[in-house]
Length: 396
Image (cartoon, rainbow, N blue to C red):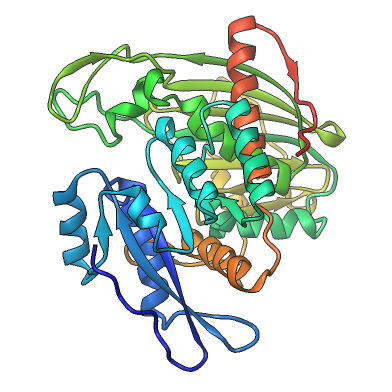
């Protein structure tokens, strides 16, 4: 790794960040290119007081060839295969590795006194996640977990509707997420093979339930119970080298969440489903005054005053154009998509960096990350035990 002197430009604060896991899809596309490099391309992150935060990435990975190639591609000089070396010369540690190795790396970063930002899930178990909460608190470091979907245009629009009281009393939420992930034999898989091995931290419950936790908690109401059924629909897949392997993790989950206030959320998650909807994830929220359907980017509204009277006639073809009966919610201040990644990831990075440098408020801390792991763990327990489980309050 080649050291680079911190900038001495007036009003600019260089913040050195160890980025671990940049050879993976998410670490590279969304966090390095779509966030850190995007912030640099915009001239750095301006703070309210006029100071500019300049993120200086130090790339970390196990494969020297891959990490060096990424650094060269983007004109970056600092990279290493040694986590200890990276931690010795940075202020912030970011982790986008496989779930099974994340907690150990975060422990090392916290022990070195680094502020930590991490992909979800924070850890593979609630006990491990809560250990990280306590360690970070004792060390006095700032910490955060990725909650990118809160920053997506569709969810921002949905939040405006909910917070503005447009929907009235919320009755129910229906969520559909997923797409077909090829088995890897006749077409390459779109997701890494470790996602389908439980021993490596794979599984759709552990991957997606943390997302559903913060979305439901912050957009609708806190989750109070869960009943889930998971499945391994595709029992055999082929890895990156074309080698056949047995799937040991769940690739689909069907859950019912009870929320504060009485609303019921039904969320399906699957890597073995073919898409027949506008976006890969969609949520419909039905309220007494209106309903909304939100995806990653779009959001549509149907108010009670504009709700048509459906006609049930199984003997005649359907002639109603149901989609045309909904009103698009305008973009207004919603985030936009940027080349190479989503502005949603960049927006949360900007919040976290401002939190580190200036102490500005930041909501998605390690305790929030632990709540996501808690819901995943309870979801798996519900599946095994075949019963509904309450979600107890999680305290630091």
